[in-house]
Length: 488
Image (tube, rainbow, N blue to C red):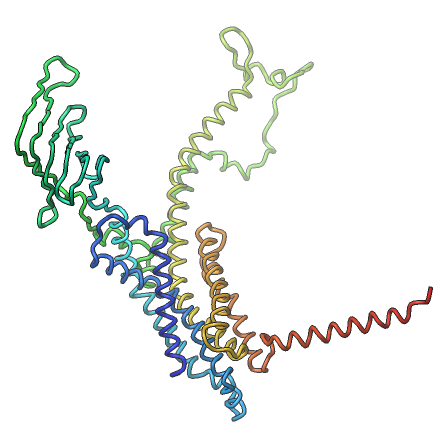
């Protein structure tokens, strides 16, 4: 256990760090240039770290178990233990208990901590993505991030002294409202809520009245010094209430998810019953399904009839005003199409709602099973890593990392494929979320069986000797075939 705990802690935090970097690699464009303070970024990293623990923990268990048993095999300690009459399963028992305890702790973490972390992470991430960029005035470019204003300067002597300043107010619509000055001093208030311009030697132009009418006033005001204050509150980080996302399936515990599943099941059953009642009024022919056609008497067939219209009696024919006969068939088709349109319109609205409820039910069940399977994965990957390390008999961070990455990629892909299939309604939530466990558990049991019998599964010398033996056998057969061939 002492040999295991060191590599486990190191690999866990290393894996967590790599996963955090992957997140920022994907979302870095949404955070750069927005003036996010250090405290907010630390909160984001904290919530993000908590949400990534279910993925980092199985990889850390897998890698550290391979390293631990690989080190023991490389230093021949496993050989000494087996020679003392202690079997592999007995030797694995302490770490198996540790892995089981970590699996239970992982479930508690997934059930009680992850929903809170997901909620805080979702709201904070939404706020940061939708936050406007921080104030950054560049030379020769209109700055339009502050609502209702466009600001342009020709030159910045430093961060506060500006030359040739133009402030255009866009809130007035098509009206002209411009302030232009030779130079100015820019400051941000101590509370960072206001941007203050002290402008020198300029003009203010303003148009009042109906722009498209004849009675408009154009006002020009010259000044030696003019102060303009802009509100920066729109650039601040707006906090979204946690209640906005608290009812989403990612933010719920297993008890709450189970309750939602029951509610959604009842809702879907109510949908079916309601639709059957509503459609019964349209599908009136359904009550004749069991009557058969025995008592239906066909109209007499006219002699010399050549078309469908000729078969109908005159009483069933409809005539236009120009005396052109129109068959009842076309009238029936038109009424049928109209009737089908009524039925379709009555079905489409509820069907969209029904599909939305079914998707929500799938996602809820998927989250419910994911909390269990991600905790079980800790134990399953240990059952793969421990025998694999005893077979490979290589310690350090070379060979163990290779095998750990291979099996973790298999686990990661199977888990993601299962989630994708559930979302697309290809697999049921139970089958999709337990797919990775169903594939990897037999592999773990197979590796344990091989380790118990001192398998040469990953010994390159074994494969080299086998290849050499096969090569000798082939050469021997070829030589025998040449001797048996008749001389020409």
